[in-house]
Image (cartoon, rainbow, N blue to C red):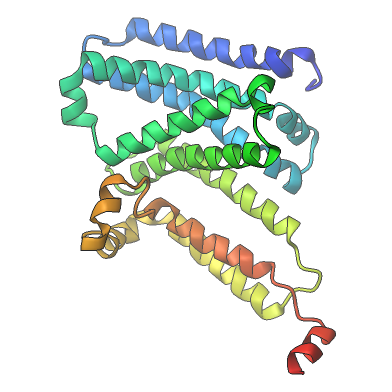
Length: 290
């Protein structure tokens, strides 16, 4: 079924993008477009349509490495078009953001605007624009393969980080998170975990060190606990990571600072790294002793 022309290439793009656009148009007919609150709800809806496409694009290559199946091969083959579907869905968000900024400026400044969030958003759209343009041959051929890969890898991580951090804050900082916030947080976490697992599989040691293996799993378990109970440690992390003279500039301008949503992921990444350490061979021991 996945070989059907309708489910591949540009046909897939239109199969996904057309319903999303239809949903947005129908939602506009029932939304209060005469207020900033109504426009804000449309922004949220456009993001909820876009984020699953981002996560699928982000996890495509890793899924094929960790769980090679017909679906993973299909997803990897159509990763470009899935990414373009995400870009199309985000175009709706940009449309409503500009609507809010230009028409409901007071609401935007009083209720929405935070400088660092604005920098993150603009940075995300610049990456998305560059990645979209260079997805086509006329622009891709003007870049070296190394620079093209660097752009797309950096961009997809930046965009994933933006979505993931939004739902982390929704769960572990703000009150009364919605069920959809849990879904998007954990699917974003799973997408990243697949990448970590793929990296570990590619770097699997020929001979593992027992001590490092046990320590690696312990560190990973600790990171998973931290990822699950962010509300328990978020206030303390904010207290110790913010409010210093040296952190004033990054607190204002650096995207994601102080990286609280990603602290558990750093811990898990350390555990994965420990799992991939080779046990020294006898020849290495002799050389070290000499």
